[in-house]
Length: 280
Image (cartoon, rainbow, N blue to C red):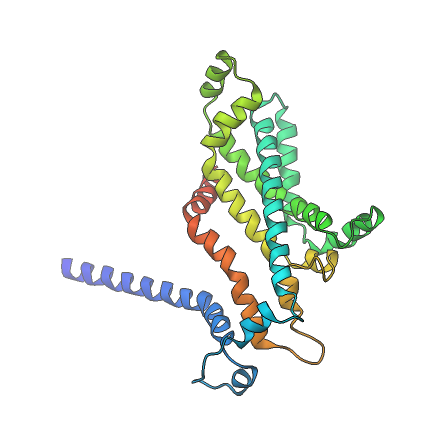
């Protein structure tokens, strides 16, 4: 009987591992295909050759060709995503502290968080027309400022929810003791709230940066060639009469690097942040 139970448990573990391996292949497979395609020529890819000679031609075209704007687009994405992350962190931390510590009626807090959740569910493409008209009216169309403001609006609800969870977990006794010692509210925020919510700040920063980095629909409509970001640059390789598959694969492979580095570096913070939200 014991032997049968052990064999059954071993079979279940084996089946679970096989299922996880299959799921991993389904998820990772497309990324591997894109990475491999970036080292192939267009002819080799279209002919479906299994064995091929790797080449760096696609990367050379992206980074060093005079007709390529990819390097500028990469810097645009870094600039926009970084600014959006800093602004969202600052606003969401202050707003979360206000909701958690100030004497707001509970219905106001719940209404604001409910509005943030509802706004997060609205497809970004439905807001592009209104944003384009408003930004054009004030002269911010096709500008970095306009795109940053749009991305801040898109990511602020998520930042508010995540930071509210972390700020609420900070013991009130620490702040009360600091006030007895003469600390002001800005000092409490900088010396107590920020250090004790490092995990929340890290998780929020990583998610906001990645979402801003990957955002396509808004960036496509609110930027020009000078201010275009990486997703727009990758899409531009698909033209009306020709699609540069291998160059597009190389552009997508390079675009993965920042997000991959952030995810590997801050994986534990992201998991902790999501689990904290689930436990609430």
